[in-house]
Length: 158
Image 1 (tube, rainbow, N blue to C red):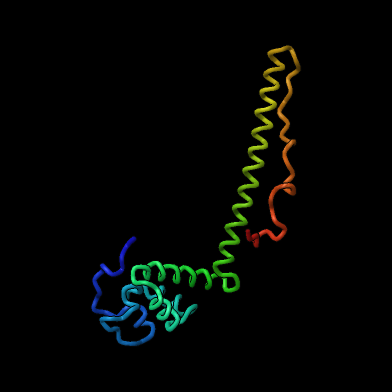
Image 2 (image 1 turned 90 degrees about the vertical axis):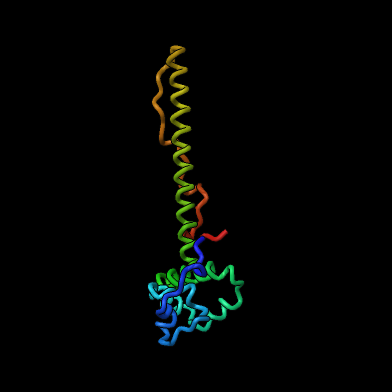
């Protein structure tokens, strides 16, 4: 984890003070987290949360947790700007939906593999014992409707 506190302050204003068009003081609470070379970072956070709310959040959080708090605010702001309606919840729901799809694909792959291995074992047994050769049947897989998948797709919440 990199520490913003260890980085030397440049003589220029931080991104927050530049954006707010104010003079950056030596005790500016935004300066350690919104460096002057990252102006879009503060602009996104300000657009979603506002400078006053970000200041209040940073004041309420322990100093050793502020870096993670700012990173979280930046991520939440970026996601909210990309998806104004659902924000982070939309991203989580999308990942959950993808996970369900991958679980379904894994079940199908396992069923096909089991069918193939079962038929190959049976066919080799029958070949060894004078029986008929049986080709693997890949049609004996479960229907996707019988798999754990919710009717709302994207918005499956546990």
